[in-house]
Each structure stands twice: as structure tokens, then as C-alpha cells.
Length: 195
Picture 1 (tube, rainbow, N blue to C red):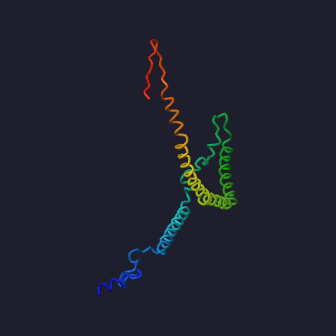
Picture 2 (cartoon, rainbow, N blue to C red; picture 1 turned 90 degrees about the vertical axis):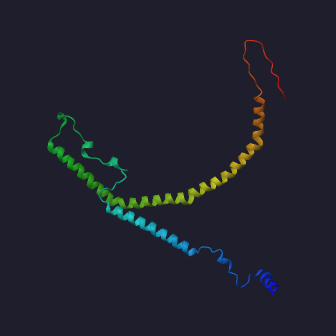
Picture 3 (cartoon, rainbow, N blue to C red; picture 1 turned 120 degrees about the horizontal axis):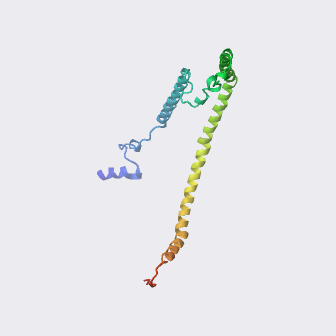
């Protein structure tokens, strides 16, 4: 009876009906969970970007926090200076030229930024997006392919050097290693070489 049941369970390689399926021992993670994780990562990245934009909108006083354009902080007295009493202009000319300079600089900059600010921002955004695209999709894959190809050439060069060049250099080294130079004022001593 027991032999009959053991034969029937092993015939045709079919497991007995009470055995658990193979998937019970090894389960692959469902793809949906990975997609959810990716979606959560994307939501976090988008929220971070939105937070950065909101923070940028709120920081209206310090618009150069990293001080990349600190050399452009030009004041009137950094450009114009009257060093000596004999070189002083009339006080009203000096004061009004200060006001005219500061107001002209302020309003002309605002006028140019109104006309050109948004188009330049669009152009620079496109420019940096294209640079990022080129680096991510063109430059890095080309560098990776080049490195893979150069790995083969490196191994080929190492084998070539080891097989063809190394014996010649060892032979030349063996030849030149037997050269002896003697400098003496006395008698010449002959060396005996054991081969």
C-alpha cells in the first residue's frame, strides 16, 4: 500500500496534491509595490521642488543667498569720488547726481527685467535642461561605452606587453646586467662568470 502511494506521487514528476506550490517557497515581489514606491519618491521630489519654489517666493529681501553676484552691489560712492577740496563740485550737483544715478540704475534695471527677465529665464531654463539632457542621455552613456571598450583594449594591451614586449625587456635587462665598470689606478682584476 505504501509502495503504491509512493509510486503514484512520483509518476510523471507531478507532486502530490497535498504538497504546497513552488511559489510558496519563492515569491517575487509584485511590480505594483515597486511602482507605488516610485510614485511616492516622485511625489516627495515634486513636493520638495514645490517647497523650494515657495521658499524662493517668500524670500524677497535676500535674493542672492549664495552671493554669486556680490560684485554687482555698486553704490554711487564706489564709482564717483572727489578726493580733494579743490576737486569738489557744488553740493546740490553732488546730491542730485547721487539721486539721479541711484534712481536711473534702479528703474532702468527694473524696466529691462520686466521686458527681458521672463524670456531670458525661459531661455536659460531650456539651456540648462538641454545640458542636463545631453549629460544624462548622451554624454554618460558614451563615456560608459568608451570605458567598456577601453577595458577590452586594456586587457589586450596587457597580454600583448606580457607576451611580446616583456621577453625582450627581460633579455635586454639580462644582457645589460652583466656590464661592470671598474675605475682603478692599480692592476686590472679579471672577473670570473659562472654560467
